[in-house]
Length: 323
Image (spheres, rainbow, N blue to C red):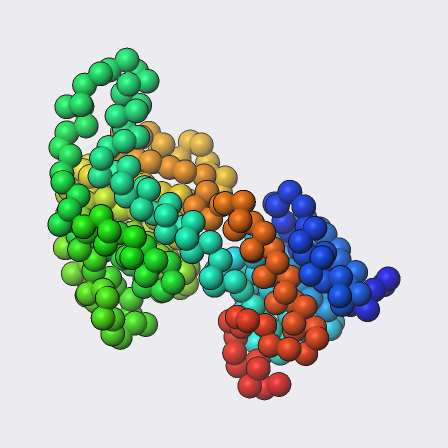
């Protein structure tokens, strides 16, 4: 090993890793960039790593148990569903993330999708593209002011979306079992969220509890005039149920930036109901500024841990208590 530490980037779809190398340079670290897709590929390159930066490659219990001296695994982003956090905790490995990453971008994208649904912007554009100059094709369109926006999840992204939505005259309600009190947003049960909302915007992490939270029962409980917006994680929505909901008119429409499988299967039935569906290609996180911020903060989490310092955001705080 040429450096004092070995830091492995398991996978990365960014144009370069110059920002990461710059941050880790002070550690005299050897930075190894891989493009792993399987457990065995991760094990092959990261077995002797001191620190790991991870995007999508699977950091499973099998991978973690193979690590010989790893002290920290940092994920590019907010969610850590690619990492077996429990296994890392058992091995005394810090799992870090970047919880304040792309908050402005994702909340703005959620509002953009909501507005596109409310004003039928995308659908009207498609009609014009077909040389159909007729606003009644998009009827009904309702006034936005006074309508109810329901937030599924009230963390940083939920609050940022609520702040922007209030400026549009929307009434905000939210369901989040981990938020017990809020002076800014009306907290409701999940059942009330479904029944009262004209728009529901999803801002929750993917967990065992949230997977397919929006399945057939939830979608049937929404208003027939309501729209579902998802800029969080694809598997929070059961796509088979969403297809039925759009096809059979349980809800008015949906706008999603994430899907259960990415890239999607282009034969997915959802793509056959495009008159009620807006899809963007997991783009909510993106801005030129967010790229730089994410890369530097992820690398900095690894650098701090390897220097014996506490990263800014530790997912498994029990590791610190053990240390």
